[in-house]
Length: 243
Image (cartoon, rainbow, N blue to C red; front, side, top):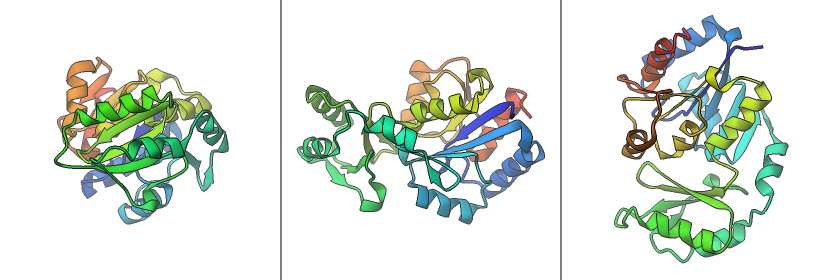
């Protein structure tokens, strides 16, 4: 059984600096038996697999994709997770409510799934508009969460979904303690990762929404890296003395 768990976002975290990604791969491969590796991304499974091929990423033990709305182990979707998310979820009602907000434009069909409703956020809208959307869903008694990231992406998910809850589901299956788990990210849809109570690495190129969250709610277990992309992950692994 592996001793440690690394859960990392892909775009602008593990991916972004080819040399740093290669160095990360080498470090993990040198001690592959010590680490479980999980990718947690906003991308769909197919898109994430394509990125893996283009960027020569290692094969992970699990894929957390579509902002935590799906989990895959190798090629197989985890149907137990799908069943958990399906409880009290009403996608059509979510779409009806979101359709009342003019600052939202639906994303392409390939970015949607049964448990994720995704939109582009109008650049002319105020960030506070996201709170109005969440309030409308809450008033309608829909157990949903709104995730805003990268200044343009709005994802509406079951309240039990998200990268953080999906990570906890996988961590418990792998039986790795929280203090031997490290999450890594750069943007707003990674905030859920940092809320689970494990160690965390925030890369130096983090988006403003994650940096603000760290300033307001970060803990001693969260490491604010000086390096960007995968170099920031490696910096954190050395800081925690895992490598």
